[in-house]
Length: 247
Image (cartoon, rainbow, N blue to C red; front, side, top):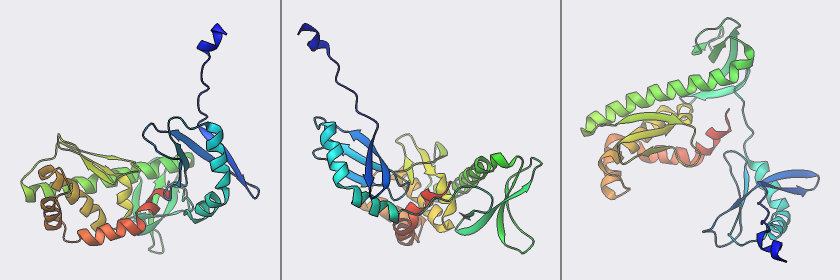
């Protein structure tokens, strides 16, 4: 009996397996102390299925809940856009224009946006074909940082403020952020959106350098910097999640 006091509680499995009509799904299990009930969601951006449970919920109960929603999971996953890999032949948007990824040469060189013999836009990648995926992403990240740097410079000059630094990352929950110290961060995936969308995000975060909130004053500044703010917001709401299916 004395050893029972030291018995360890088994750790939660990272994933649960759910089956439905011959299909098998992997469900990420997340235990949250602040959760009040069991919730299940499917990311339209990545197709990840996540089951969140309260602190004291039994894993067996969580499994039953997930199993009872097998049909729902299948339906939601069927609506998630298929992933488009950065590989030769794939169509990848660059500043809103579809570009076909082309392995241009085995000789290492600079990845660049160009046009093929027929005049169609392409992303030309050189070097070992095994590295095409990484080089396309590196190219898109570099282009995003360049465009954001130019947009931030323009908007900060208009407001008379300064940004401490600019970084680009692959964020899932937000398109951009501004820290209290003036550091701006953006999702590199916005380079795939039309230019006015990227410009809006730059204006949005630069406005936070003056107003670190979402007050009426903040939105007034954002609209002054980017007159197409409302249009960009609508674009992101309609098409934003699809940017995560690339790569």
